[in-house]
Length: 84
View (cartoon, rainbow, N blue to C red):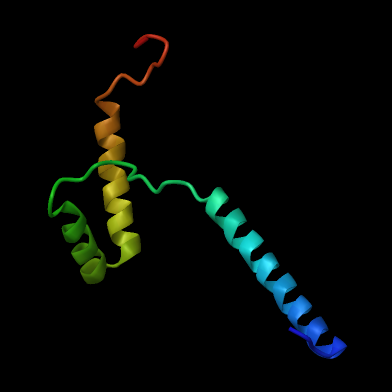
């Protein structure tokens, strides 16, 4: 394919931009981590939490859930050395 030097330059620039985009996509892919849930919730619990957030607000529900989780964690012996 023959082209004017201006057209060749445009194609060259386009190829360079495509290469930059491909490199950016590869970098993003390589930086991605698998999204794993922090805790496995039973069926319906997540839906109920979402519903509660809509009704009472995210801040209120988060505060309540954190309070409950802190209390539950006090029931567990969290001394790692002792539990090895």
